[in-house]
Image (tube, rainbow, N blue to C red; front, side):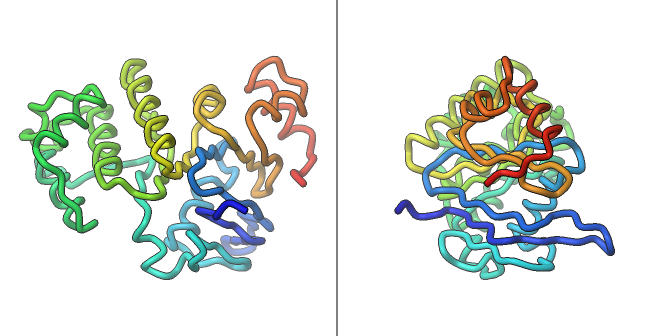
Length: 244
């Protein structure tokens, strides 16, 4: 049986009297590309916050490579890019990458950094410019560069394509496929169902804090009789049927 990179075991989370996550139970196999989808308010960001120990659980357990998620060592093998990524505005791009890699006890040579910038269609001149001068897209690429240069076993991305133009999106998808080929695990959220269909081997649909579907994107299309991912997704969340 393949090792689980992440395991959610009957995870529950409440905010006051409101149940935000209810008995969430699924595994992310190591080395797989995994997509988490749902409408705004479905519980996606809360699930990631629980995974990263940014908030406590009201029930259940989360493991990262077999270790409880509250253990610092469990999180040492992952990199995370939030949806609203805001690096310190006073740093240059080079300074930011240097600090982030140092925190991860890693280093990257100039050629490696420039190659990563080129892969993301980001001008190398931006390395020496302050982050406050970056556009939204440039800032997102900087965050992706920091995560990818860290070479984590598990990469967690919350809406990684946000603010990217079509060329940058294509470049990022290419890098994520390379990461999968290297045997690393990718877990990301996206409102773009086409990205999930194109990249992911497995996906989960959350709706109103509950697990509605767990399986491949292709199986979602078949099970919910959709001629597109969008239609299958709508049929899924409107059906009220929970994943088994």
